[in-house]
Image (cartoon, rainbow, N blue to C red; front, side, top):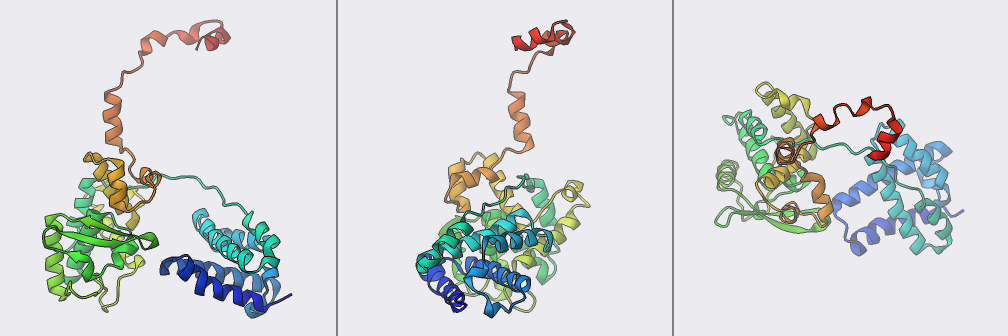
Length: 334
């Protein structure tokens, strides 16, 4: 049992494979790092060993399945998070199988562990009047309020992911015609998104107040300490104004809303404005149109409009169908 190989494998996985060969973003690397770190700590406790004494043989199928069950039951992770952990483990063992052929059989067994299916829930989003209600709830008389307003307005305008927004630098903004913002998405993909003149005005005032030179790579949205906002900070900001706006629009209090809901809201707003799904996919930075279809769903008003243009069933013709004595004959006739 070679304990040193595990350390070598982890070092080459993060040092060469993930960054140099695969070109993964730092966010993906951080997610995989956290997953493997949790796995090593869990297996070490189960085997009553220090992490430094573990070997690749200790990371067998039974141990990994036990870890995944612990993630759900012990850490109360959702199925999606469980699958993210497994994805990181799969990626690591693909690397192990390539670099250390002697562990090919074990790697194949680990890679055979399936992802767990989960129920698909509809993603809540903000109707256009709800977006306005949330923005109206922001107190723009304070410096923090003006930052929050600029943040939320830009998120709705661009449909950007929350990480894309918090990573935004001054050099990514162009406030002269044609006004646009450069967004760095997943997989280091770059896309350009136009912004409305109203958004330009809000951003210009905010940048002037914060003395942010868009010719410099300075973080656009920072907290009161001057540090970049985090994803959790944006989540807190949105929740605060949604709670405040729910007094005006009670419908907001019934929705499960988070920063990604704004991205979904942008997609639905574009769809209702007549924008085709392919253009929405480019707007949101989706490589696959199937991903866009998850966001660009018909809202209830669009469904009602479709229903109103559809010929209804004449229930009078079927009024007495169930009174026929021969039910089996009736079923056969359907």
